[in-house]
Image (cartoon, rainbow, N blue to C red):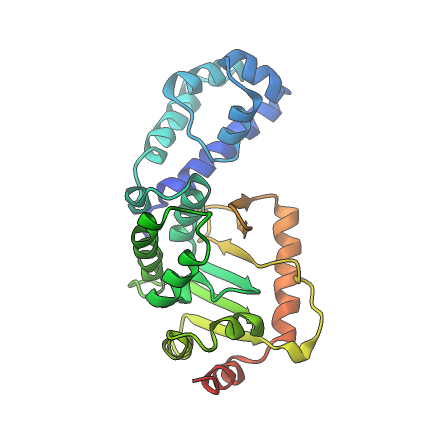
Length: 278
């Protein structure tokens, strides 16, 4: 029996509902902010599913949008469910990362393209630790253990009783970044081993293929079971990351991912390619 959606997906669902109700009544973000006595940014964050409205905030918005008691009660129930703590909350992750990890936990299909990094779901503990040591601007040294543990916890999504499907396309550059380190052999072997799992596909995009459509950076696409959530995309950059649920953008990224897949080595060829580095 499928697991019910987690709090991150429910928070996004509530945000979608709030945005739909507001736009249906032609109320602007500015007008909603005035009624709540808050900034326009707060309203946008609620509608994007980044922040959860309080019970009084929801009551004010329902009155402003002319919503009947039945819908109000349903959304309040959704708000309470979305307010529950997911496992990731105990790791004190940055807000932008919490939102992503929460959505990732409910995804049924994860499509990830990386330029310089081995995808987080495929990293060994030693490699994950090294990436955090290499980016001290993201968190204090004393917090590395916690972040590494959280990353390893995320990987359990791939080995669960009903695991997510992962399709990872990795630029050859990411493999070169590992070469010569004391964790290189372990990381290469781990990639080969994970590629043998039926729910995981790993393709290498070699330098020999030349230019491609995502040279500016990597991204993740998350797909969900029917009725859970619309697909979303996620980007990370030097100091943070962001979710994107604009379906036009998600669709374009899906086309880019398909193009990258066409340029990449096949799954078996990719496994042999990585194996030659061991």
